[in-house]
Length: 83
Image 1 (spheres, rainbow, N blue to C red):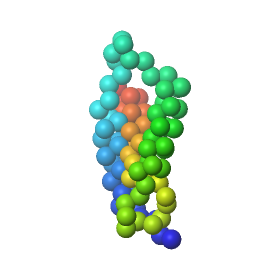
Image 2: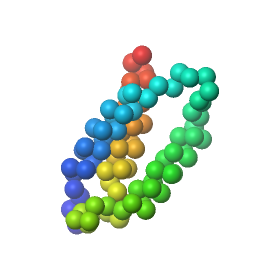
Image 3: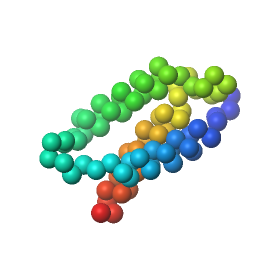
Image 4: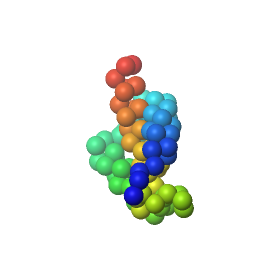
């Protein structure tokens, strides 16, 4: 079993780019710790149900989706602190 790094690397890069563009300054949307936990749980369920690409046999979940989800949170945390 060998882990495919291509989807993971591109998922993290794509997630960081998207996470850096998320704006949370609106009054009508409030993201609390509970909403982030729900987003992570829903993301893991979606990654599990979508499965990996047919020719990847490393894990039963979509590693690209999970790494993009992680990248979104990392990008949001990195660029929220710099502003």
